[in-house]
Image 1 (cartoon, rainbow over the protein chains, first blue to last red):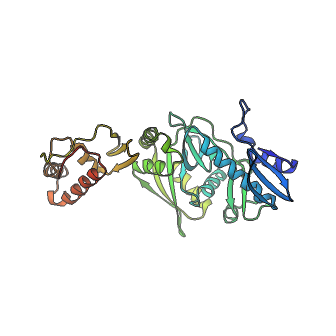
Image 2 (cartoon, rainbow over the protein chains, first blue to last red):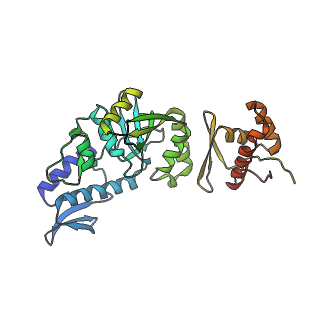
Image 3 (cartoon, one colour):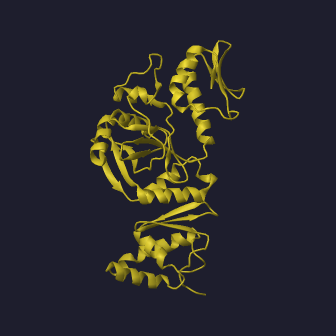
Amino acid sequence: MRAESADIFDRVDRLLGVLERPLRARPSNTFSLATKNDKLTLYRDCNYLAAHDDKEVMILRALAELNRAAVAATPHFAVHAGVVGSEDHVFVIAADSGGGKSTLTAAMLQQGLEYGSDEALCLDDEALVVPYPKPISLDSWSWNALGLTPDDTFTEEAPFTAGDLGAGLLGDRRAPTDLLIPSFTDGYPSLTSLPASAVVSSLLQLSFNHYRDGARAFHLSTSLARKMRAWRVEVGNPIETAKHILASLA
Amino acid sequence: MSNRLGPPRSHIIESEIGDEISLYDPTTERVVILNTTASDVWRLADGQHTVHDVIKMLARAYQVEPASIRDEVQTTVERLMEEQLLEGGES
């Protein structure tokens, strides 16, 4: 990622710093933010992607494009899910976009868990988690419900790091223990046990890349189904829900 | 023509998870997850038993009247045939 403006670079660097790795080879993609015709313009490998005069909009867009590229490029089996962990548990929060993954992930981090991802559960060939601690994107409802204050300049959606939530990062090679499938309620949070087959169906239905090697995806999913517990979580207030989950399961 | 059920097509990948069986067909890339009863039907679909045999055997195992599980067994068989998970076979 490159940025013409030092201020924008510093902001993006703060958000993505935990993902930085030594560059051992030519980068597969280069994203650039530069000013053109008074608008902040985003390029991918010199190809135009978007432009806007609001730099917060473009920072969010750049993060989204970077995320899309990262998920597409991962060699690991990847599932659309949040991942958080305690000493004895690794929770996988499986839901589509808008399903509450990021909010519940953030709420659980506030309860002291470590951050794996709010976007993708990535599994190596031993079905162990490969953390992907990208910035957590929360809308205004979510950050208000969680008592968070974003950078002044973000108004509708804002990125937060694990550090912003007082959380550490999940270590490598942890085995997932519990699958949480959220649904929304106006009432109290609750947990309902689901059959092991829910792990198989959720992981495969929410997978980004099962099509690359269907047999491997099936093997990993069924392997995890033998080891994980599955729960439907009725999510009310996210903080109370996180407390309820930890009190019940951890 | 045999009216025996099965056996499973040789390329189907099967995985047992507790009492349930998940099936993966690499040619269609489809996954079928069988509940407990359907898993028992699958285990008996070995080319040696008719659907009637399966209903009787499961009714004895579950200690219920055959009529009470007939519809579920037949629905399972139809689904297994639709998904082309079994060799030939007719109910």
